Length: 317
Image (cartoon, rainbow, N blue to C red):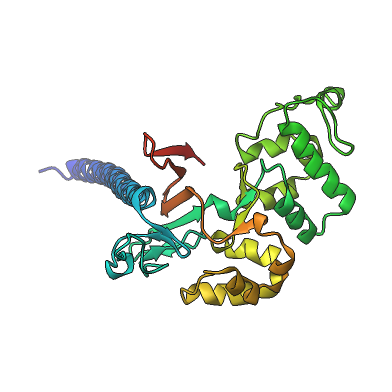
């Protein structure tokens, strides 16, 4: 072979090697891209699987709680799950022997946590502040505890009343349609509040978003003016009765509930000055159910229709 052909052979070998390297690099990039795409799809599939599991857990627990609320016995301590048969025994005349069952789920907004991370709570609406009450005793007390001035209290309370009543007669510190129109705002509905979010439309409240944000967690549109002491969330109790907040939290943690007016007064002496028309010890027929787990959450209100069909009514919250 001629020596003149050796450089040409070397060049050919170099070109082949370069081509092999280029192909190897391209294959590596393609394999890496495919691997990343596969990892992304696997992650998406796992995420979808986890979310499906969360949805199943959340809805399963919410239906379980709905069953307890709709069928369980309500006591001072909450809703009985029926787990303690002795606690639900009746006497010969048909009355329950025990005032509590020992197997209740609390209805004061207490959050239960399961090992799988699922959290849930029951909140009886009788333990929340009534927005549609014709006697705003508790709303007034809450505003006082929030250090709202008397003049501002009057505007807030009378503004709520003017929005919800059926006439166009303006209260001294309130606002009716003419004043809303003057300020280019939607006129009052002249009907009871359908949800607490309507406060954002009330003239006296709309410019106080911080106050609305503080009030909404404790707000309900029920009409009765009394408050169920055993259903008041601990954070709301601390606002209304700060001197006994630590004591009531400790009592509830030990499953000691307010079973008589005297027991309640011993813990919170200021109750002596409050009419019994404004508080009770048992919860009402409506309960807010909240369940959440990771990315999923559900919240709705159940009103038990005693002796009627359907046996309960559901409302979004």
